[in-house]
Length: 124
Image 1 (cartoon, rainbow, N blue to C red):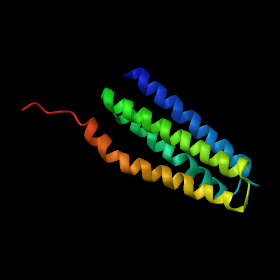
Image 2: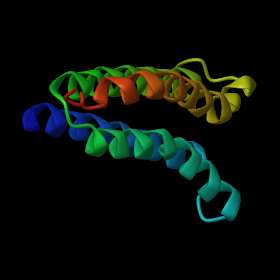
Image 3: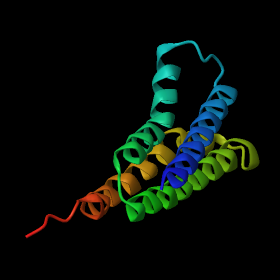
């Protein structure tokens, strides 16, 4: 179980760093307050995932968080790379807002089932 949690943290950390680096590379001046806010918005789903990975306790919950981490990381990195570097057009900057929004939507939808999956069964 601890191994699954460690893999989740590795996936989350790599995805957060990759999102941060993509954000820094595509911004013209990463020192202003707007850029810092967007970078925090990029990384915020991964912070929530890290907290979720730390809080869950059961084996099935840890596996669910690992799968969720992989889905969110792959989707987020793929969408950002596609929007910023592969299909480089004017609408690519919308990925800065849309990708984390979709990630948060998926996180919020899956948080409730994970909560019930993580609850411990009370003896009668």
